Image 1 (spheres, rainbow, N blue to C red):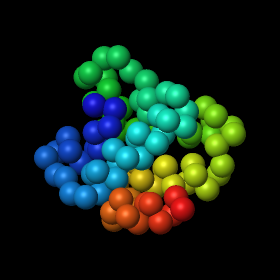
Image 2: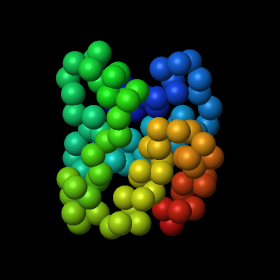
Image 3: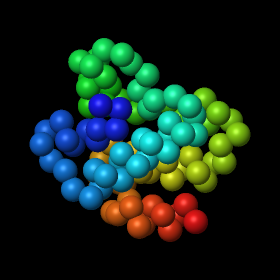
Length: 94
């Protein structure tokens, strides 16, 4: 559930949903914490639906600001604010 994009809770998904999952994976790799540290599945779904994760740099100040920006764009709650594809995200990561 940590990698589930908010729009999947309403049955909508496209390539940007996969980008969210990539962003959540990168978030965890950089911070060594899940985007929403929560053990209760119902509470976790509520967090995914209604909130933003803590800024990665708050958890690890060594993360470059540009990398944090990429991660947060990939995990934007609104799919229209995310990368359109994993390729677009990869270009920014390079």
